[in-house]
Image 1 (cartoon, rainbow, N blue to C red):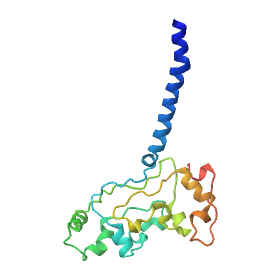
Image 2 (cartoon, rainbow, N blue to C red):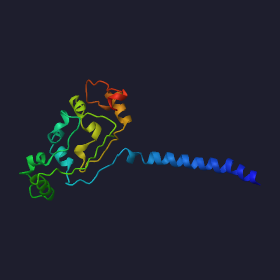
Image 3 (cartoon, rainbow, N blue to C red):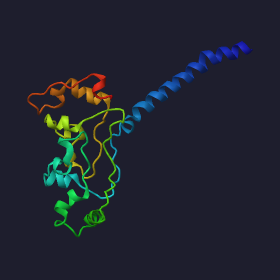
Image 4 (cartoon, helix red, strand yellow):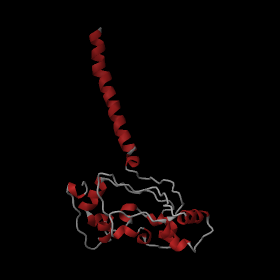
Length: 189
């Protein structure tokens, strides 16, 4: 009798259990991929800011607000003083501009929540990419159409390597583009 129970467990229960575990793992891996890669991430910001209005309709260049992007590895989130270049005059009576003005007058940084994140173990330099003519939208998506900034693309090793290996496909607007480095030390420092 005991041998029958053991045989049944080994022949039926064990393979069935392993199958269910494997299917669950595979489904969870693929279903949660966007969340793991942060695609769709759009945190609520302390001040509602429309990139659709500013970068889209008004066509303000990204570099006007993200000033260090051509000189630094970081794009730098704008300070209240950058915003106040226009909003010390424009739309001063709007609730979000009143919040902005308060941060500015109290000399407090706006606690913006970071949307686009690269893992701490990876090195990325904005200035190298921007100075080569790579447009912000290539990585960040169509920001000029976003009312609320959302991470549209994953910042994964696979995504970076796709572009480094096939830049002519990923960046068709550039006439002459070189392949990017593929060695581990280029990003993992």
